[in-house]
Length: 320
Ligand code: ACO
Image 1 (tube, protein in one colour):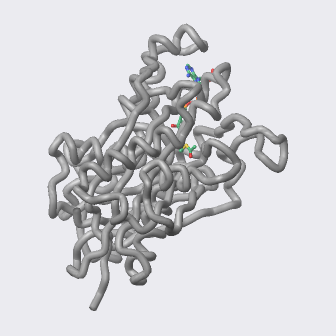
Image 2 (tube, protein in one colour; image 1 turned 135 degrees about the horizontal axis):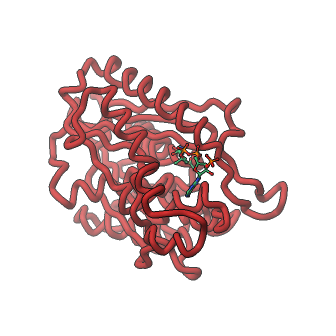
């Protein structure tokens, strides 16, 4: 018997405060026009001081649990993808476990920056396929605003806060759920995108430093390559993909990938305009948005892909 893992439900949470491009014009030397033209971002949500990443993660996870019709005791483990934990330890995942009153089981964070959700999904999928878990809560949650230098216009306009979650569940049906996951990193490119601080160096979280043009070029090439790999491995063609759900960093990277696939933008889930780049939260936020708006339907074929600091990148093909 072959075990597979399927997405039972999705959930998400965005902090109430919305920061528009117009408002950013009053903070740094920028314009709404520049931000929209270069990135597609119109606004982003920003968490309050007393709303740490765990607050966002817990609310997204609760939302996914409510949609699933399951009880807390039905969940065996929690994985949270985040780069912005509340504390150096304990993990955000154990806070989700406690807040949802889940039973004891594995709970841990994974850190792969913007690719974090794909990494976490891949780990959860492996745990389920190995038979050791029946259901895993997988969350992507970030308070990226806490890593921003609000005087650096080249980065502070790009990011936002939020969280998304899925409950992954064991299935015995073949060709369902997570069909394949593909994970990569190239540490030689770690200086293209990083924070200028950390626990064991400056003792602070630091701020994001990004060589945007270089990241952009790598993103376009690596996303095209990994998408090709997913299609070949699964013997599917771009016409078979119902929805491309990319990491929401920049509309130009998203359209570039869609063009390479020959997919029209009406089969691409875009939330970057409203969310900005929420790093590990961006894909589960986009997925939940598309599920709740009725775009993504059961049985459809979804292609997820992301690239982030590390550089790390990854993709997943899912029969939803
Ligand atoms: N407002 C106005 N002008 C600006 C702003 C701003 N907010 N930011 C930069 N500029 C100026 C620059 O100073 C520069 O001016 P100059 O020509 O006088 O020197 C000019 O605009 C062009 O700047 P570039 O950085 O070359 O602009 P580019 O077209 O490359 O766009 C961007 C920048 C949007 C960051 C783009 O490079 C990008 O999206 N890169 C990829 C981001 C990404 O995918 N990151 C991965 C995930 S993030 C993660 O993992 C945490």
